[in-house]
Length: 342
Image 1 (cartoon, rainbow, N blue to C red):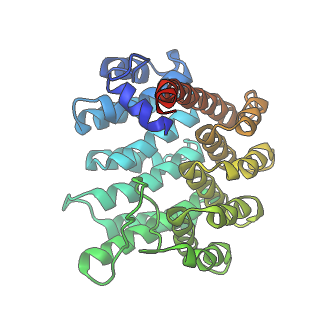
Image 2 (tube, rainbow, N blue to C red):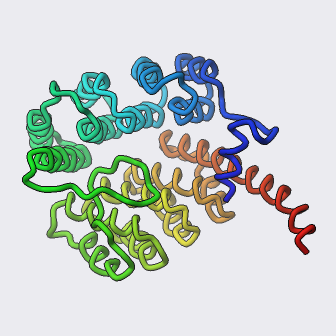
């Protein structure tokens, strides 16, 4: 795949544009709004790769979060990456962001998800997952934001499940699959195509808690295939119960990079009444898929009235262009070999 070619090139084996250096990453993120959004976005997602250590990457991101004052997109993505890095030192910052009522709800939402991810990666005895779950449940009970409430409920459920796992009362399934992200809920262990209808039914069951529906969602992602994509794409457009759930559906469709999802994602992006977090995630997913339909949809919303959506389309188009360049490189590399083989 082009992704493999890109990875080799970024390691220096192919003489084409490489990843930003550690110095360039620091300059971009610490410059804040003085640096273009696309440059900061790329720097953010290369920070762990090029940093001298994960600790250095985490320290930079913790310092840089508040500097992205002009961009909800970047602040919430910094929170996401901090959650994935798993450094306990990020917990106070994520808690402060979550509790900041002046912060955008999408950034607060990501901080809540990050706290759950951090706790599940933390080996620190100072991290009390039950206390954190109680804080999240309390915030869920009092916030006026439905999306933030749903996120806090999900994060609390994940924390309590993880705590039960540590005590031996229950076990959290581990995804033995190609996806390395720390997810809000686990998919079914050893699921196959046979499990797709049941997983789709769980995802669609509005009587179930969101955490259980998420399990169905991640089972579909882990299994993959035409029927799984169809079920996820259908739920993206049909669900009316939770913007948080729909945004996660868009996220996993982006992870799957299946072209069959492009039409549904484009429709979600085109809905002006849809929550910004869903439209944002649909845009990012379209950038990962990178088909002509995907890019056309992104261009149509490049100047959307919702700044989060507009910036998401901008970085998604840059992502699509990046992978297209590697596909062209791969084709050139394979061309001479194909001629020799024939």
